[in-house]
Image 1 (spheres, rainbow, N blue to C red):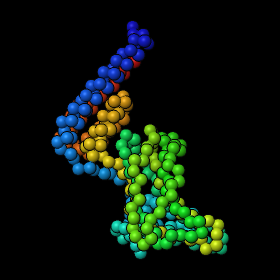
Image 2: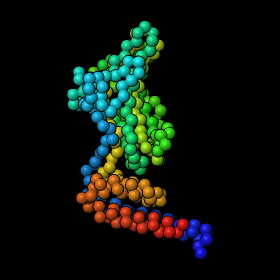
Image 3: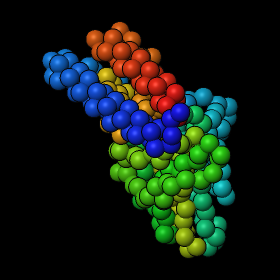
Length: 267
């Protein structure tokens, strides 16, 4: 009969020995493979209709345009394609005006990867009456409860020119189920307050290249987060099944599965 202390010691032994084995295995893979043949970075976006091309009339499919003076889908200017989102705020007297662009994306996110939030903006004028424009990224867990987010961050662009706004290395909390992206445009309670701008090509993406995924797998094995490592391995094999590293990654997957079985037996 195995007592609780024996089980704990066995689990610690499994964890330590496997972490050492996994680190050595992936460290050898990184040294042997990546220094000689770098793969082309592959970027996947999770935003459907990122350039507002789909939709009827003033609406863009998959987006919510709302608030007191909501944006519209416009064909008068675009960074790419034929359409963009157009915001044109104009106070009536001293009543402030506001517009929101909202996108909610549901699905599993790989928190071990670095995500990047980008969009293009074209200011038609600087804005007046305390005009501000902001973005906000908000996370939700499996129970649809709010998690930590970026808070409201201000941005601006050049007047009369399309300019890309890049937000690198967006931190993703563990156990995220969905993300809400919000653009907010608002004037102050001042007579003559106004703002006019186009938004296009909104993307939220991760670098899922061979190098990025293997580094993330290595990191999660080191941290003994084997469930996350297996999720990353599945993504690797789906995206890079023909790569030179696929055989080694499959072998690591088999070792991880075997370790989990041994760990379950020891409990």
